[in-house]
Length: 331
Image (cartoon, rainbow, N blue to C red; front, side):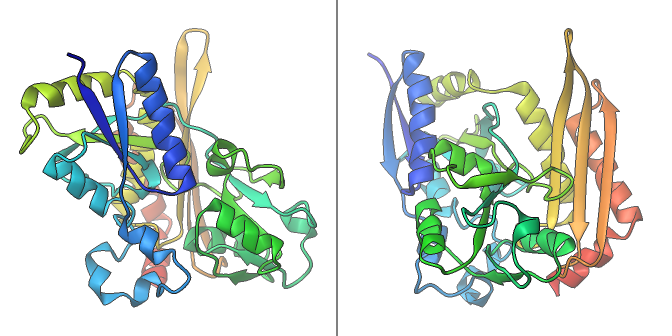
């Protein structure tokens, strides 16, 4: 009898695309897959009537923003109601709950941020004082470093909601993750994709994280079934993407940052005919107003460990004053 792999997913269009993409890949390998939709704290907060993240005392343990899109999904995983969680990797805390395992990280999509606007085709063409829709402290600081005159409009919701609000005139332009727009085939208004050294992406941006129960934790499901799920999911892992995001997340963890502070890190392989020759990594830490920026760009040999590369970059950022900027952002 074929075993069924139950995937837990948020109900947004993008989350369902991601879950269905993984489900289709598993099915093509001969597995039976079901998807269960789970509503998360982050989904509730994106509703128009919701309060801002930093005004919700009940969410103090999630105050850095990490965890608000995964809490209920991980609860379902722990209780055995689902076998596999499909996350946007940038939503996962850098330290995973020991009950769970990041069983696979598939190939990453475009990690860059995208400028979305039909009227003004690039940031430099936006009129003085133009309104940009983004609530990301990272994007705000990076945009201010390039254009100190711009203003920001708080726009929550899924990709379609944000695009609709742009069309209604709530803002002059949006900055969104390229990966989400591409996956939903909504990139028709993207006329600029920011270079990594302009808007350095969030650690893990564009990547998916496939989370299962850890081998030592099987409260309800049988250990044999969990072994089956982990083996099936492990086949989807992409070593180069895993290395890149582990290095990025190590930088973030070493700096003590979350999604509420302006940190960008992006690592990519430099490949040749024989495989990966080296790794290139770029990192930015900014003051919230964008006036001060600490950057590190470096290359490392192919044999380095991801964590070692991440710690090396974090140490260099600290030596250049990154912690001072982060203390300002956190205050």
